[in-house]
Image 1 (cartoon, rainbow, N blue to C red):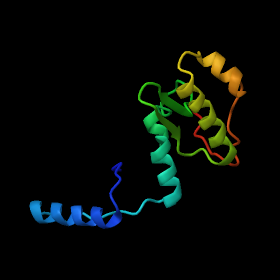
Image 2 (cartoon, rainbow, N blue to C red):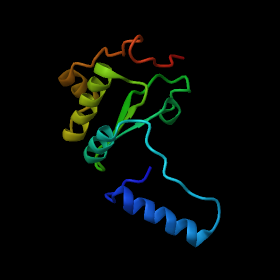
Image 3 (cartoon, rainbow, N blue to C red):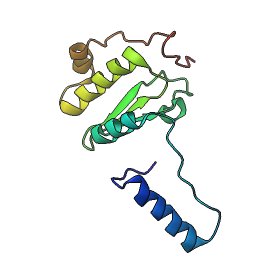
Length: 128
């Protein structure tokens, strides 16, 4: 996905120009599967979602729900987290971003996520 401030019309023009330049298979814009508001919110706050494979959850080393790139400010959360579970993980990761000197233990204490595990009825997580 391209992180851009261009309008939809400008993007369509860009796609047309690329198609004319390369004269290969047509490139088309794909609408995101999530709401436009969520997209704007996420890009503004530098928050993204990724699947289990991206986090390495297919390996037998445990489950990762989110990660913060402290100095870049990017937060990536597991895409299968929904509702309150996603909010809890997001709050935890935002604390990492805002307090880079805090250890994982201190962050878990301050965000009350010491024994966090998502509700399986709301957020199905592949447990290995």
